[in-house]
Image (tube, rainbow, N blue to C red; front, side):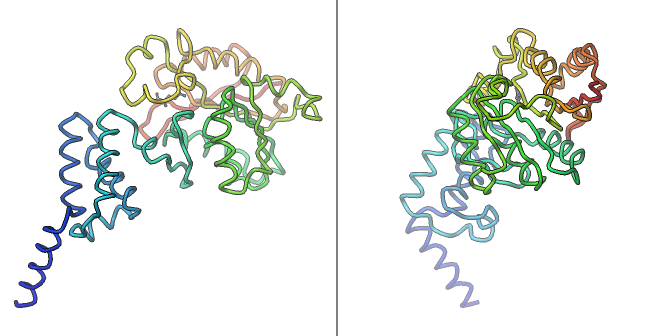
Length: 307
Ligand code: GLN
């Protein structure tokens, strides 16, 4: 009993000395929730753990730990950003994808869990193959290219992006996993850098086992009603033209000459326009299938069988 009293006194003294992790968390979660952020509690936990350099679980095991003034101020700044709808990944400058950690900046789209379906479908099709050659168009943060190189240890990848700022982030992410020798980054629009065969010292025509991409696929109408968080992401990574299909037309038409006869294309698609994308691919003579994401929404188009 005496021990319990001492313990309680101790907790009270610590509280009086400063803010505890638990109280900061509760207060922030309420503010985020009142601002209409649905993931309020989770966001508050992730941001506080980030500021403190703790694992999220530690917030539960040590809620009475006092947080120093510098961290309190840093957490408040992070909450202010979140209240302005800045995505958590941009506040922390990192995002997990395929159990790997990626650096992200507002120059790149934040990797999404749905895109793991695309990566996994490519891995399962290329596993065990002798040094497969893969193209990743619009690589952004490099999440797809890096995950493929990491999980397919014999693969070589050519990744392009029109944005030099995005490619710097992608190079950084490849370097973090020591994959810079197996991923070749080129700045340019879609296939454009690969047409300059001489410049690369070889021709890439007919040499790819897979061409993958998560292209911009939001239609103009949808772009006008983006969720506030999406307005922080690069427009160039989202805007798929009037009907959201511009990049599917370009990629499906352009891919043919770069693919091996046994090669295939794997594209992330909008669940709202899966059939339209399929019609484009079918019309170009590909045989196609559509894979669902974890929520059961049409998310990936596989196109192959080019002769
Ligand atoms: N996944 C993004 C979304 O939230 C779209 C990404 C893209 O255009 N490729 O809608």
